[in-house]
Image 1 (tube, rainbow, N blue to C red):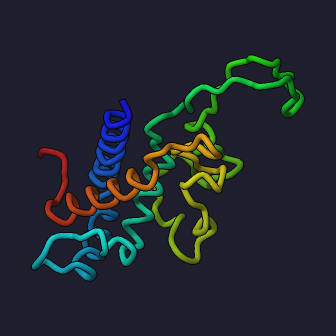
Image 2 (cartoon, one colour):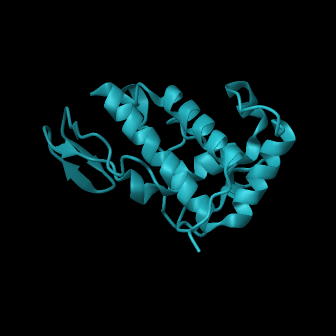
Length: 175
């Protein structure tokens, strides 16, 4: 089950990234130029290239934000009664976090429904927001002690597979 969960979610995220690049050819050209500059055309992308591919990393973050692979978190059960924002939550209540809604919240994100990787680039308002569960504006892997155990592998896989596909092919809709 863990292997399937990791491969299905990573594959889905890569598919969304490619779909967004097809919809936004100017973004695709920009990341291809970055790949050509950092990697060149004479070899394949290596995992060691990823830290130098800042625009690619921004594309992956924006894909995680706009298209979380698990729109609702794994259910939790309240261990005790509490009140959150005026709502009473009884002990034993099943709780879900709407990851999809959080990452599209217009009080947090400018133009939340638009694919804008630039929002995560150095110098931008959101450059320090991370997808690793420390910033609750975007939590595709959850947060806290129940965070996805495959998060690091998932991020690296999505980055490397997306980079490899974009470096090797020009993606477009059929004419």
